[in-house]
Picture 1 (cartoon, helix red, strand yellow):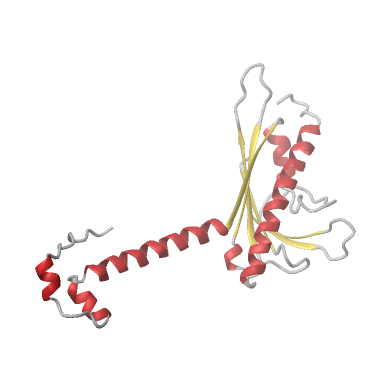
Picture 2 (tube, helix red, strand yellow):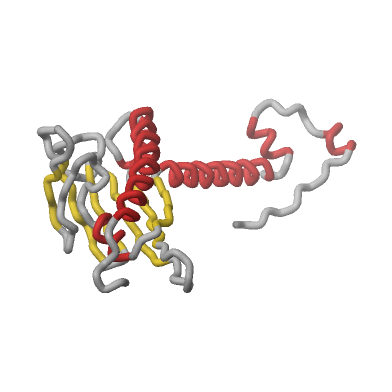
Length: 211
């Protein structure tokens, strides 16, 4: 951030001798350009604030802890569209595109598998407001899942942390009001789906090797 020179204090004699201010140019001249510098700082600061707000509004993040093994949790979060009712896809093993049938809907949801990092990270792209549409720039958001062990203390239940991050809402080709509605709806949806994920994972049978 640049430093500004200290403001010059005007004396009573300066004020009485100064001609009447008739416009913004006279105002700038009367205070030695400090108003211009201050105005530039206010504009910069406001622009930074707007960018920060926009960044916050572009991202959903939700974390939970699950009493299960990392393998059990991983087998669930890697299934494309697992958050859609009654979907039953196999776990993803690499990048690709799948059509996910869910519930009683005849139109499958097209989901791109973006990246898979075994036991730790998986990401998908989907057009959450357009069932059946292929995810492209302008209609889709990125959904990321992070899976991390939370420790294995002797005598304590084993827990795994799962974080979901959905981003890209500001790039959707939607009116501002609909874009905001989409973000709010998905934020509420993830709270529900992550709670359901916890229940499903904690009901799974432990692996045969006891891990």
